[in-house]
Image (cartoon, rainbow, N blue to C red; front, side, top):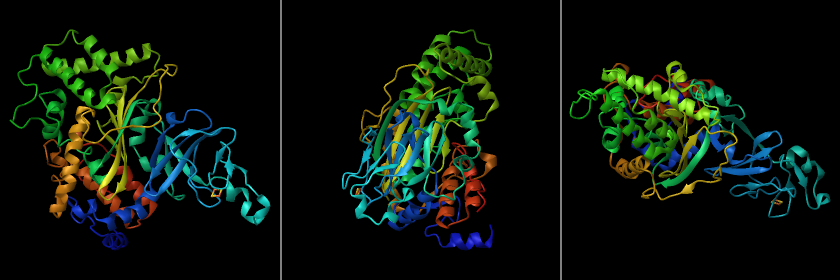
Length: 471
Ligand code: FES
Ligand SMILES: [Fe+2]
């Protein structure tokens, strides 16, 4: 680390000094929260809306985060972002989503108006103003940087920040290979968690919690064998299972994943798995699982294409493009692929110990298939029994973790040793540390290029180890 970096980082309160220990004040200290508000959020790409929320020219929606509000407007030149504030005296112009009629967007205070391109079309009593103050650039809606990826509009308040794609790094190509831009909403739910936004992120940045929090996902299975080798009791998953039982168990596990997460394995994909479940299998269990998995990828691809969806070749992409079951895009966006569909999360801070958590089930469906796209999330209390099983289990832990963090000084992560990633608790929680150190980089005001490089590294996957992010 350069001396300049070290000096700048030394100024950050509650900074990470040991990458395996996270000072707990970072999760509740109002001063730390204010620093994030001032130095982090205004400089990062934020997922502002899914483009499908505003499909027609004139449609708009609002993205609020902290004290900033952005109007996403579908103009004749695609979706653009503007400050959601009147250019006269600052009144918030829109609330929620809507459609800009011929009358335009009208300020409720003195009646200034803007058309669906964001251009001012009416100033009441023009002659009353110094005309220099009515230049177009002064009264058209104030633009905010907006770039698209994965079917979403992202915004950034920093004119000098690297492009969205440069900031995302290799994860962008991983998800492009899976046609992330073609995903469409299946459902969308939201909840308010009494939890710091980073803690909410962290509930989904490691698989170490699966054994205890989601026991139904951790029965003997191909996936479990892949990740951890053995379970609590030292059993080798799949040992002693005949090929048929192993495949049946794999299907059960995919169903459990689906029942909680929608798109992580979509119900249309489960139907295909059921349909091919009786296929001939090799006598060797491991080979049978592999054969079934390959057949499942191909059958899901074919099923989607037969319905008219522009589905990628799932098996080919699975073999050629490495991906993670949970893909993270700093600071607040997730995609969770398995076959062709995905789940997705977005998290926004509401206060030092509160955040807004959204969860989508996303599918690749035929363009002409009629679907009533939700325009806002269905809100549920975080402890609602209506939440699907997996998020309900995660949400049950996060609030009590937030409480417990007040009682200790440091949060301990597993040992960050790359060589030991196959063993539980020995490095799979490194992404948490990587993220926190990137937050410190923003709070220290490090240069854009160093932050970009670090973000490319942080945007890795589930179960990552502690990595060198350059500072
Ligand atoms: S504040 Fe909007 S028109 Fe005056
Ligand atoms: Fe979980």
